[in-house]
Image 1 (cartoon, rainbow, N blue to C red):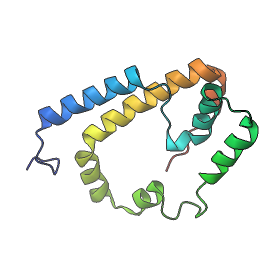
Image 2 (image 1 turned 90 degrees about the vertical axis):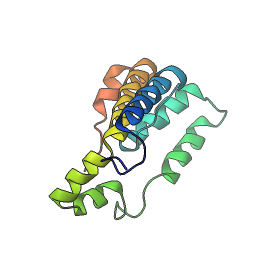
Image 3 (image 1 turned 135 degrees about the horizontal axis):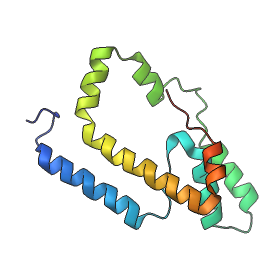
Image 4 (image 1 turned 135 degrees about the vertical axis):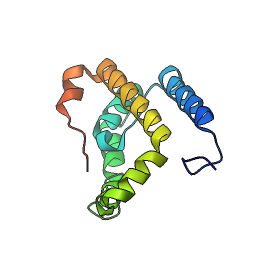
Length: 128
């Protein structure tokens, strides 16, 4: 087993991450980020107009709100980890972080294209 806790070699994981990042950029019209969910909904509104768009997208956004006030969110879990556990996690998910970084880049480009850079920059990312 590799140091990443898997039977996949670092070279294979790195190449897989690179391919995943390329596919996100080349194949997805929209990439949603949990921490910028509102912008995801706004991009979908632009791409997928519906006769009752105002009501449909408002209801969809509301349906996805986390009613438990983040008690079980990724942030809550991360904040409960000690420093050693965070370091181990960061080593283990190194390639996933590369794919996520690519997703953020694609999200930000698509957002600027569809909604305008000013709109996208005005919505801060929620973070831990």
